[in-house]
Amino acid sequence: MNFALTDEQKDFIDAIRDFCERECGTPDQRERLTEGYREHHSFDIYKQMAELGWLGVTIPEEYGGSGGSMLDACLFMEETSRGLTPIGGYATTLIVAGATQRFGTEAQKEEILGGIASGSVEAIAMTEPEAGSDVGALSCKAERVEGGFVLNGQKVFCSNAHISDHVLVVCRTTRSEDKHAGMTMIWVPREADGMEVIPIETMGGRETNHLYFTDCVARGRRRPSPSSARSTRAGCSSWPASTSSA
Image (tube, rainbow, N blue to C red; front, side, top):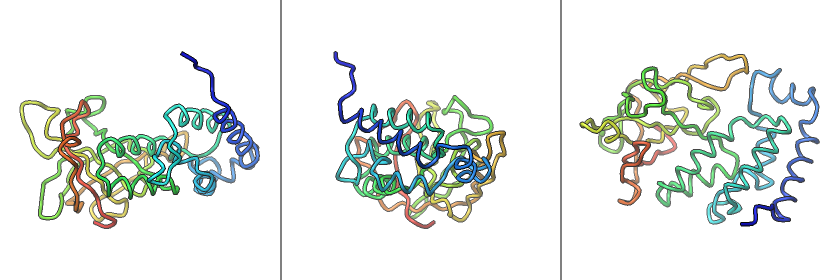
């Protein structure tokens, strides 16, 4: 097996490296872009990268991406990390992009993947005060109502929630003997009524958050196909869609 990079990938690396050196190559530039190192994500830099087509590197072309591979995304992250580029929102966005490609409906792919390629940040919320690596122990619940779900509970250490367009919330919709069954991933717009985002200050600045859900309504108009609704190791038993408002 040939593990050598292609000429196109080598050119991609060179372009990212040149961009990083030009736009954020000095301490003064990085301090300005991060508001004195308090913010880990610069939307100015991120917008430029979106216009260059880099944020959609793993997204299929029909949704606004370039149709590249996960290796291309790794090259992108490696070079931006090397260049100390303040785009902290990309990591969780890449996770959400992968989940959307695997489980999302066609309408969700158009909305979420298209937004990511254009520069939106997305977040995912799983960890709770009493549920960390054991996702099956989570207790944040969502009750089905006409037209969607009502969420109640708490999440913690939710990276990038404060700068995201949506938070993809993993929550419990039913209980059974199998603790990994009965969980659903639900889109909640960041400005939704009933979701409170409280920052957790760290030595690295503001990058993670508490989330509190109090009768937070997430309206779902679409449902996944049967094949995408099957339970997975992550405990995701279905994928209701979000709307632009709650």
